[in-house]
Image (cartoon, rainbow, N blue to C red; front, side):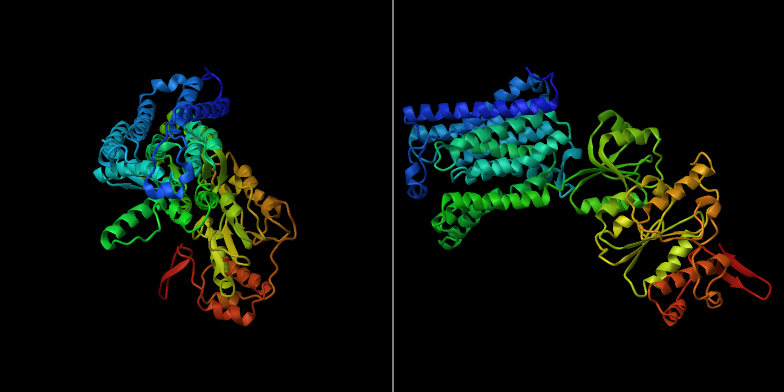
Length: 607
């Protein structure tokens, strides 16, 4: 037994073992059936199309089932002690037996009908309902369907949908088993995302079992490709189809099956459409159903039809599945909510951690993370979370990669002009005034502490747009990938000393912004030589607009920031007249020196 070795070696061993057992069992089945002339009869119209396959052995599903099950038993027999996993595998075995009885009845009675369709369907529904009961669908918390990472709690209707997926998947695979290698290839490709997901979630037993069936199919397809020496039969197609439906329900990844099983769905729909249309009109839409026979009758070769279907499913697979990630958002303030919205849009599975309990699906408390130790592909850290926080250190160990919100946004950002603004006071005022004037001529986005988090804009920003980014000391501390074309320091004074050990550590984080600058365009609005240690970087005023600005703003610093913003725009090609016209619409920043009342004796300012 190999259960004591690490998981990677178990995967390698079960893959190799399943492959060779499948080859051996398949070869043996071919020999026994040819020797005893055990063949399954096909319906007349298919027999005419595939007359050369009349004496081809079938029931290859026997090889696939036993090679995968025996391999799992040899590599890690401990799955038999997990009642849920054992029940799942027994359910798949029940579908296999259902198909095997159908195959045997065809052999015994020497016709293509086999078991009554109603009886077979009854047992399929029964097996599916037993599986759903084992998986917990009798409880309301499990009665939902995952539709592109949106959990739809549908009550008992979710049970009906899950049962439909299980039965539909097994029969869709059965309908697709009409060309050499087609059903086997569809299964191999469709199973890939579930194998990846199983191991990502540390679901070892299911992962090993799926890998075993995957490898068994590879061994089987050597004999199943054109010219096929053996078919998988109903025992194989119902067995493999039930696995696809079962694991999609088990992992609540129903939408993944919808994507990678698109060919199976189209094949099934072609039969349904054909039957309904024929009953209504006595005419056929397709030359023959399922769809792959229609293409054959159009003159396409078997090899071309199989290749066509395989390419179609690969396109769906790589477009939708490869980019899938399990993401943990660390901190659920304004930035965290924007991150969730962004990752939801790309069909990632999003989890949320916050010190405060929040009413969100997939919320993970610290105790849950500590007890379950789930693994995540990506962690995104919101601003202000300490690197030495005990809870954060655990969370960091659970994430394969971890980035600050700004680092991840910059990874996705198109080439644009980024102006960084930082300081202890005045950041918001200066950023607002600069945005007011710069947006007159250029597409400009205001992000960071002010406006929206940058991640909200990454899909909108195109080349040559401007981004004004207000940076806090926490964002600077947590980031490594920010790239700035211009950096403004407004002022520096002791701040956030409830978080920092002393003022020097606070200043040190502010100074780190210098590493983000791509050239030497660094400006100080106030004298910071003693703090930053760089001289002669005071912003140069070409035209003094102070007297005009005082008509619209209160306060020395507000007027100074607006004056610098206007002069920066002069450097970017704005004319004096354009800026003065724009100045007319300038309003004070909310809660910054807003004049609310004035009489002969007093002026009341809201600051």
